[in-house]
Amino acid sequence: MQSNNALTVQTADSEYLSLALNSITGTLFEAAERNIASAIGDGSGYTALERRAMIAAEALRLTHGFDLTAIITRGQIIQQIEREGLTSVHPNGYADLTALAREQGISVSELSDTRALYEVIFPYIQNVLGRPLAEVWAEVGKSSMRELVPALRSIITGEDAAHNTVREAVTTLLNNAAAEILASGEVTQDELTVEQVRQNAVEYLLTQGTTLPTRELRRTVRPSRTPPVEAATLQTGATEWFVSIHITSRDQYDMIMRQLGNHANNMVLEGRRREAEQFVDTFRRLFGA
Picture 1: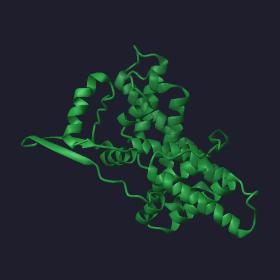
Picture 2: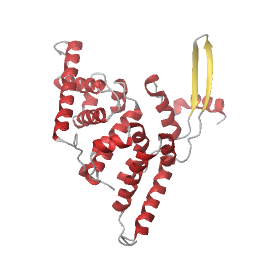
Picture 3: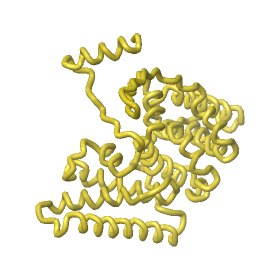
Picture 4: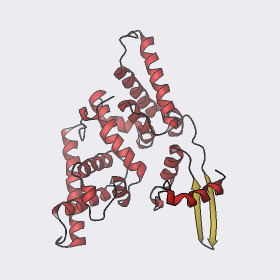
């Protein structure tokens, strides 16, 4: 498995851009510190670590968009929050990083994609493929790169993707990459390495990202369509509805969460304990499950 610890992403492909990006990060934290100071005054009643956690969360909120600069800046802030354990000491008592990020307007899918890009994919492009990060980003584009994230992460790390459709696509891509390398005659079956296959598959996907429309690219990395979910809507007033959705796979769950984004305050309830059995039975009867 590819060691992510061996990969160190540079903030940019030139010293000038690196300095500019570092300046942006510094400016964000300065703005965040001013906002927090305005909200809590002199900070009495909060520890230094709690104040630091609030500033980091506010800096995360101030990052916008999904361009290269935003991803790198957001990735740096996320790493700092995790490295210093700031989620657990934040006065709001966030359960985890996902909850903290969601409160700052960052959806589950945005958080996952940001971490995969900053921690895994960007370092691989720069340090293993030896390609300028900004150039690759410009060639592939934001929308296509996001489509490629689950497959690229799985190929690079060797870890199974969360979605069955992506796992199937990755298996096909790796098999095709191995066959292409062997067909070239450059190496024999015994000489072929896992890293050679991974690198070939990554380069192939990045090339596809530069040439295929996003919709067609999606069929390459998610060849099986995620089936629609079953839903029931109860109208209780002229402008009031309750919706219940039956999700039966991780693919469906991520699809729904991606569509809802920041438009829904999703309350997750635990339905696997004995005291919740009657409610679970009611839902299952509703959907005939």
